[in-house]
Length: 172
Image (tube, rainbow, N blue to C red):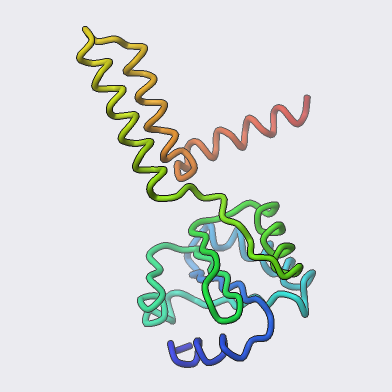
């Protein structure tokens, strides 16, 4: 789909549109695809799902500043209201479709850029103070934890560990 056709179709859409940019070689895309297709069936007539192969639509990806896949972009009334990069859990995707079906604008749970920058800076500052205070390991560790809090939601190792912990604690 070329850029002009995409925007023309978007303008004509009476419902919110979730656009899934994927590729056949992308593992996370393959994981998310059946979830999205199930949600599209569940919310038929309320929310539209468009699945666009990133390999076949490089011009559109460039126009929309898409640098990673899977990328989900939500459009309401022809305007982008939300963007998710990477695979999201089924519960988050269901909540997004549900809020769109109700006519609400889904909220992003992602941390804002300035919050990330502030946390990274604060963590670095605390770590440096710990280093200059005769190598105070407690302050250096605290600085590391603060800095990590700025990026933990993007860390695949953290996601894998927390998923395992959730599985273990849900059995108990």
